[in-house]
Amino acid sequence: MVRTNKKGQLKLQQMIFMIVAVTLLFSIVGLFFVSLALSGIKEDAIMLEEKNAMLLVTKLANSPEFSCGDSFGGTRINCLDLDKAMALKENIAKYSNFWGVSTIEIRKIYPAERETICENSNYPDCNVLKLFSKEQNGFSISNFVALCRKESNNGQIYDKCELGKIIVSYEKKK
Amino acid sequence: MKRGKKGFLDMPFSWLFAIIAGIVIISLAIYISSKIINTGDTKINAQTGKEIGILLNPLETGVESSKSVSFTLPVETRIYSKCNKDGAFGKQIIQIEQKSFNKWTETDIDVSFSNKYIFSEEYIEGKEFFVFSKPFIFPFKVADLIYLTSADKKYCFIDAPEDIKDEISSVGQKNLFAENCLDIDGYVRVCFSNDLNCDIDVDYNLKKVTKNHITVYFQEDALMYAAIFGDSEVYECQVKRLMQRVSNLALVYKDKTDIIHPVGCDSNINLVGLSTSAKVISSSSNLKSLEHVINDIKNENDMLMCRLW
Image (cartoon, rainbow over all chains, first blue to last red; front, side):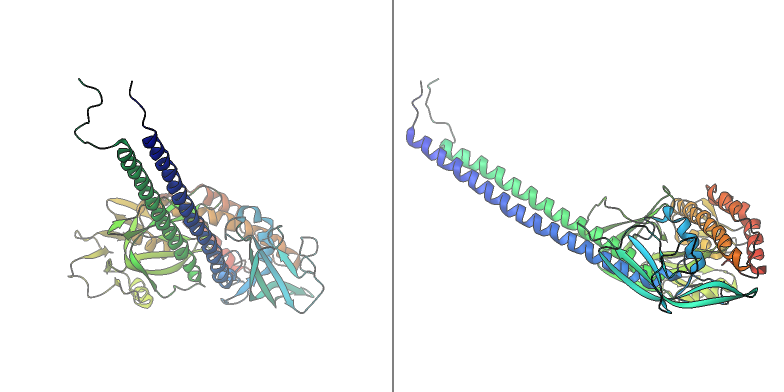
């Protein structure tokens, strides 16, 4: 039978403790760096969404789903066809993730009136068109647009354009 | 054999244990740090992909071709443009690979956008890239198509019709030439006449583009450029996506006719028919079948007292 060396056993135990401690230290330092990197990813994602919102809102009125096209005499920039936007509201389910924003709201700002949400029953006697049923949260960015629609007076059809805002909002990443 | 005799290493067990444990710890540290570096690379790739997509937002324009814009990335980059036709509008996918320590960092992170249509080779490589866009009108504006090319690749348009030549000149993109490029080597030769020595053949009358022995079909100049600059497989997928958008937009315009009807604006355009026909288009070769429908609808809209678009 081989005799056990008590001094050697103690040294071995010391070494095992040391190794465990060093491994723990490495793990903690590693975890710290990983959490640091992950928090950076979240910040970057928020920053990118803000950038997307800013660039998108300036051009959203010119996208085919909103733009006036030639409906109101000649091509206009930042002109939003309110009749088309109202029609889009009917088909909005398909567009839920299309622009990558959580809500799009169109607001008539002049002339100033009491807030009335646009529905089929009260259009065009309303001033806020909410394209998604979600509530605005996170952050939102807006841009001024011309809101144009067809109107008639004594059987005479004419183009009516008013000053409005298009507002897009994003949910903050959790 | 005698027990207890020292081995040839003459090393105490504690040393041997320390060496093995040390190797394990160092290997673990190297593995973890390489994983962290890899995560960092993947993050940069994903971030670059998203940023490229976001920077393309301003290319959503009015009705004219936009001027060419360029962007430069700090390192050699490969931009993969992919397409997915699932869902109501499909998705444009961008994948980025960047050179790190002289090696391409592989990534499987997809950055996707539902409202973008990018046409480029399967992947384009370089530091500087050019982009220009053109609206696709079918018969209403459907989307702005984005053409993405590497500054390292130059295109020579041979015998192009005058309006195409003028458009290329007005875009002002440094890697597109419509004149004085016939005898220069290294250019991608885009021929509008039957020439044997061409990389891309465009038959402007039959509306087809042949590239790498694959023929795709187009309607409107916007799709012709898409076929020239885009990968054939991605092109077919994007055509399907565009038709999905035509189909949905047609229904929006249909509902608009109902909304403006009480004002006195009437129309009998068969937009539901257009929506149904566009939805079933499965390949660019079917686009031809819509040509007459599109022309009729365009003419009908032009005649309306209240134009729908």
